[in-house]
Picture 1 (cartoon, rainbow, N blue to C red):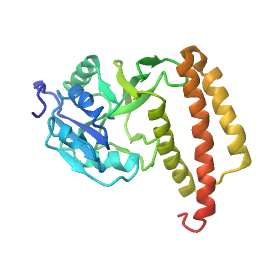
Picture 2: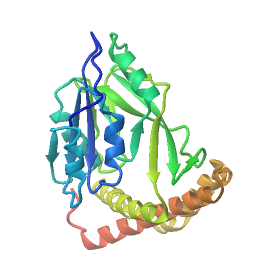
Picture 3: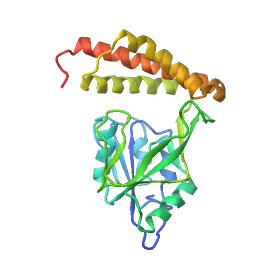
Length: 265
Protein backbone atom coordinates (compact mmCIF):
# COMPACT_ATOMS: atom_id res chain seq x y z
CA UNK A 1 0.00 0.00 0.00
CA UNK A 2 1.56 3.26 -1.12
CA UNK A 3 0.95 6.54 0.74
CA UNK A 4 -2.41 5.38 2.19
CA UNK A 5 -3.13 8.69 3.91
CA UNK A 6 -1.97 11.07 1.18
CA UNK A 7 -3.83 14.34 1.19
CA UNK A 8 -4.66 16.25 -2.00
CA UNK A 9 -4.48 19.96 -1.21
CA UNK A 10 -5.56 22.07 -4.17
CA UNK A 11 -2.86 24.51 -5.21
CA UNK A 12 -0.28 23.00 -2.84
CA UNK A 13 3.32 22.53 -3.97
CA UNK A 14 4.05 18.78 -4.04
CA UNK A 15 6.38 17.40 -1.38
CA UNK A 16 8.99 14.65 -1.48
CA UNK A 17 10.04 13.05 1.81
CA UNK A 18 13.58 11.60 1.81
CA UNK A 19 14.76 8.97 4.30
CA UNK A 20 18.07 7.13 4.53
CA UNK A 21 18.16 3.76 6.28
CA UNK A 22 20.16 0.68 7.18
CA UNK A 23 18.80 -2.14 9.36
CA UNK A 24 15.96 0.01 10.71
CA UNK A 25 13.19 -2.61 10.62
CA UNK A 26 12.23 -1.86 14.22
CA UNK A 27 11.77 1.90 13.65
CA UNK A 28 11.15 2.73 10.02
CA UNK A 29 7.46 1.80 9.84
CA UNK A 30 6.41 4.35 12.47
CA UNK A 31 8.48 6.94 10.63
CA UNK A 32 6.89 6.10 7.27
CA UNK A 33 3.38 6.10 8.72
CA UNK A 34 3.95 9.63 10.02
CA UNK A 35 4.77 10.93 6.50
CA UNK A 36 2.27 8.85 4.51
CA UNK A 37 0.39 12.06 3.67
CA UNK A 38 3.27 13.32 1.49
CA UNK A 39 3.13 13.25 -2.33
CA UNK A 40 6.22 11.06 -2.58
CA UNK A 41 8.51 9.10 -0.26
CA UNK A 42 12.10 8.27 -1.24
CA UNK A 43 13.94 5.65 0.83
CA UNK A 44 17.67 5.15 0.22
CA UNK A 45 18.97 2.02 1.91
CA UNK A 46 22.67 1.32 2.32
CA UNK A 47 22.59 -2.47 2.53
CA UNK A 48 20.08 -3.63 5.14
CA UNK A 49 20.10 -7.29 6.08
CA UNK A 50 16.76 -7.13 7.90
CA UNK A 51 13.23 -6.30 6.69
CA UNK A 52 13.84 -2.55 6.27
CA UNK A 53 13.30 -2.51 2.50
CA UNK A 54 10.26 -4.81 2.64
CA UNK A 55 8.60 -2.53 5.17
CA UNK A 56 9.48 0.57 3.14
CA UNK A 57 7.84 -0.90 0.02
CA UNK A 58 4.51 -1.03 1.85
CA UNK A 59 4.53 2.77 1.76
CA UNK A 60 6.42 3.61 -1.44
CA UNK A 61 7.79 2.04 -4.61
CA UNK A 62 10.71 4.50 -4.55
CA UNK A 63 13.15 2.34 -2.57
CA UNK A 64 16.79 2.35 -3.68
CA UNK A 65 20.02 0.72 -2.54
CA UNK A 66 23.10 2.95 -2.59
CA UNK A 67 26.40 2.06 -0.85
CA UNK A 68 27.13 4.15 2.22
CA UNK A 69 28.94 7.42 1.46
CA UNK A 70 28.58 9.32 4.74
CA UNK A 71 25.54 11.17 6.06
CA UNK A 72 25.77 14.29 3.89
CA UNK A 73 26.40 12.56 0.54
CA UNK A 74 23.87 9.81 1.34
CA UNK A 75 21.09 12.29 2.08
CA UNK A 76 21.95 14.33 -1.00
CA UNK A 77 21.72 11.16 -3.09
CA UNK A 78 18.16 10.72 -1.79
CA UNK A 79 17.34 14.35 -2.63
CA UNK A 80 18.68 13.87 -6.17
CA UNK A 81 16.22 10.99 -6.68
CA UNK A 82 13.19 13.06 -5.67
CA UNK A 83 10.64 14.20 -8.25
CA UNK A 84 9.54 17.40 -6.51
CA UNK A 85 11.27 20.66 -5.63
CA UNK A 86 10.18 20.75 -2.00
CA UNK A 87 11.98 18.25 0.24
CA UNK A 88 11.31 17.09 3.80
CA UNK A 89 14.19 15.13 5.31
CA UNK A 90 13.26 12.73 8.11
CA UNK A 91 15.40 10.13 9.89
CA UNK A 92 14.16 6.64 10.76
CA UNK A 93 14.11 7.45 14.47
CA UNK A 94 11.89 10.50 13.93
CA UNK A 95 8.14 11.00 13.62
CA UNK A 96 6.34 13.92 12.00
CA UNK A 97 3.66 14.98 14.44
CA UNK A 98 0.15 15.71 13.08
CA UNK A 99 0.66 19.35 14.02
CA UNK A 100 3.89 19.58 12.03
CA UNK A 101 2.27 17.82 9.07
CA UNK A 102 -0.54 20.41 9.10
CA UNK A 103 1.94 23.28 9.37
CA UNK A 104 4.01 22.02 6.43
CA UNK A 105 0.84 21.56 4.37
CA UNK A 106 -0.14 25.16 5.10
CA UNK A 107 3.31 26.46 4.11
CA UNK A 108 3.24 24.58 0.80
CA UNK A 109 -0.37 25.52 0.05
CA UNK A 110 0.73 29.15 -0.24
CA UNK A 111 3.66 30.82 -1.94
CA UNK A 112 6.30 29.97 0.65
CA UNK A 113 8.21 33.13 1.64
CA UNK A 114 11.44 31.20 2.33
CA UNK A 115 13.51 28.58 0.54
CA UNK A 116 14.19 26.56 3.71
CA UNK A 117 12.57 26.04 7.12
CA UNK A 118 14.09 24.91 10.39
CA UNK A 119 12.12 22.49 12.53
CA UNK A 120 12.40 22.11 16.33
CA UNK A 121 12.77 18.64 17.79
CA UNK A 122 11.61 16.95 20.98
CA UNK A 123 14.18 14.25 21.74
CA UNK A 124 13.63 11.14 23.86
CA UNK A 125 16.00 8.66 25.49
CA UNK A 126 13.83 5.59 25.89
CA UNK A 127 10.48 7.01 26.99
CA UNK A 128 11.96 10.04 28.78
CA UNK A 129 12.01 13.40 27.02
CA UNK A 130 15.40 15.07 27.39
CA UNK A 131 14.87 18.78 28.01
CA UNK A 132 18.44 19.80 28.80
CA UNK A 133 21.96 18.45 28.01
CA UNK A 134 22.06 20.79 25.01
CA UNK A 135 19.42 18.61 23.32
CA UNK A 136 16.78 21.36 23.48
CA UNK A 137 16.17 23.74 21.89
CA UNK A 138 17.22 21.75 18.84
CA UNK A 139 16.45 23.38 15.50
CA UNK A 140 17.60 21.92 12.21
CA UNK A 141 16.68 22.65 8.59
CA UNK A 142 14.46 19.80 7.38
CA UNK A 143 12.07 21.43 4.89
CA UNK A 144 13.73 23.07 1.89
CA UNK A 145 13.55 23.78 -1.81
CA UNK A 146 16.19 21.68 -3.47
CA UNK A 147 16.80 24.15 -6.30
CA UNK A 148 18.22 26.55 -3.70
CA UNK A 149 19.55 24.16 -1.06
CA UNK A 150 21.63 21.01 -0.68
CA UNK A 151 23.28 18.85 1.95
CA UNK A 152 26.87 19.49 2.94
CA UNK A 153 29.50 16.87 2.04
CA UNK A 154 30.09 16.13 5.74
CA UNK A 155 30.49 12.47 6.69
CA UNK A 156 28.78 13.24 10.00
CA UNK A 157 26.93 16.24 11.47
CA UNK A 158 25.64 17.04 8.00
CA UNK A 159 23.57 20.17 7.44
CA UNK A 160 21.45 21.76 4.74
CA UNK A 161 23.19 24.68 3.03
CA UNK A 162 20.88 27.21 1.38
CA UNK A 163 21.43 30.49 -0.45
CA UNK A 164 18.01 31.85 0.55
CA UNK A 165 16.30 33.03 3.70
CA UNK A 166 15.34 30.50 6.38
CA UNK A 167 11.92 30.37 8.00
CA UNK A 168 11.01 28.64 11.25
CA UNK A 169 8.31 26.02 11.81
CA UNK A 170 6.60 26.11 15.19
CA UNK A 171 5.40 22.53 15.47
CA UNK A 172 7.92 19.91 16.57
CA UNK A 173 9.48 16.80 15.09
CA UNK A 174 9.54 13.86 17.53
CA UNK A 175 12.98 12.29 17.84
CA UNK A 176 13.19 8.87 19.52
CA UNK A 177 16.95 8.79 19.50
CA UNK A 178 17.88 5.72 21.54
CA UNK A 179 15.94 2.92 23.20
CA UNK A 180 18.65 2.41 25.80
CA UNK A 181 22.35 2.43 26.63
CA UNK A 182 23.39 -0.36 24.25
CA UNK A 183 21.93 1.52 21.29
CA UNK A 184 23.56 4.73 22.51
CA UNK A 185 26.97 3.02 22.66
CA UNK A 186 26.51 1.55 19.17
CA UNK A 187 25.86 5.04 17.79
CA UNK A 188 28.83 6.38 19.75
CA UNK A 189 31.10 3.92 17.97
CA UNK A 190 29.65 4.78 14.56
CA UNK A 191 29.80 8.55 15.07
CA UNK A 192 33.32 8.43 16.51
CA UNK A 193 34.50 6.51 13.42
CA UNK A 194 32.97 9.08 11.08
CA UNK A 195 34.10 12.08 13.12
CA UNK A 196 37.67 10.80 13.30
CA UNK A 197 37.73 10.14 9.55
CA UNK A 198 36.33 13.58 8.81
CA UNK A 199 38.90 15.31 11.03
CA UNK A 200 41.67 13.19 9.48
CA UNK A 201 40.67 14.25 5.97
CA UNK A 202 40.67 17.87 7.15
CA UNK A 203 44.31 17.50 8.22
CA UNK A 204 43.59 17.52 11.96
CA UNK A 205 45.82 15.91 14.60
CA UNK A 206 45.16 14.59 18.09
CA UNK A 207 47.07 15.99 21.09
CA UNK A 208 47.26 15.21 24.79
CA UNK A 209 44.96 18.20 25.33
CA UNK A 210 42.36 16.67 23.00
CA UNK A 211 42.50 13.33 24.82
CA UNK A 212 42.40 14.71 28.35
CA UNK A 213 40.94 18.20 28.68
CA UNK A 214 38.32 18.05 25.91
CA UNK A 215 36.46 14.99 27.31
CA UNK A 216 36.42 16.47 30.83
CA UNK A 217 35.10 19.78 29.54
CA UNK A 218 32.45 17.96 27.47
CA UNK A 219 31.24 16.26 30.67
CA UNK A 220 31.25 19.54 32.61
CA UNK A 221 29.52 21.42 29.81
CA UNK A 222 26.76 18.85 29.22
CA UNK A 223 26.02 17.98 32.84
CA UNK A 224 26.38 21.39 34.47
CA UNK A 225 26.52 24.25 31.97
CA UNK A 226 23.72 22.74 29.88
CA UNK A 227 21.83 21.52 32.95
CA UNK A 228 21.93 17.80 32.17
CA UNK A 229 21.72 17.28 35.93
CA UNK A 230 18.03 18.28 35.66
CA UNK A 231 17.34 15.30 33.39
CA UNK A 232 18.13 12.85 36.19
CA UNK A 233 19.92 9.55 35.53
CA UNK A 234 19.38 9.95 31.78
CA UNK A 235 21.12 13.32 31.94
CA UNK A 236 24.12 11.72 33.61
CA UNK A 237 24.19 8.91 31.02
CA UNK A 238 24.12 11.43 28.16
CA UNK A 239 26.82 13.60 29.76
CA UNK A 240 29.18 10.66 30.34
CA UNK A 241 28.67 9.22 26.86
CA UNK A 242 29.23 12.69 25.37
CA UNK A 243 32.59 12.77 27.15
CA UNK A 244 33.31 9.23 25.92
CA UNK A 245 32.51 10.25 22.34
CA UNK A 246 34.90 13.18 22.60
CA UNK A 247 37.71 10.97 23.91
CA UNK A 248 37.14 8.09 21.48
CA UNK A 249 36.97 10.23 18.32
CA UNK A 250 40.32 11.89 19.15
CA UNK A 251 41.85 8.52 20.06
CA UNK A 252 40.70 7.14 16.70
CA UNK A 253 42.07 10.25 14.95
CA UNK A 254 45.45 9.55 16.55
CA UNK A 255 45.31 5.96 15.25
CA UNK A 256 44.48 7.16 11.74
CA UNK A 257 47.42 9.55 11.76
CA UNK A 258 49.72 6.70 12.78
CA UNK A 259 48.27 4.07 10.43
CA UNK A 260 47.61 6.19 7.33
CA UNK A 261 50.10 9.08 7.41
CA UNK A 262 50.34 9.30 3.62
CA UNK A 263 46.66 8.83 2.69
CA UNK A 264 45.31 12.20 3.78
CA UNK A 265 44.03 14.29 0.85
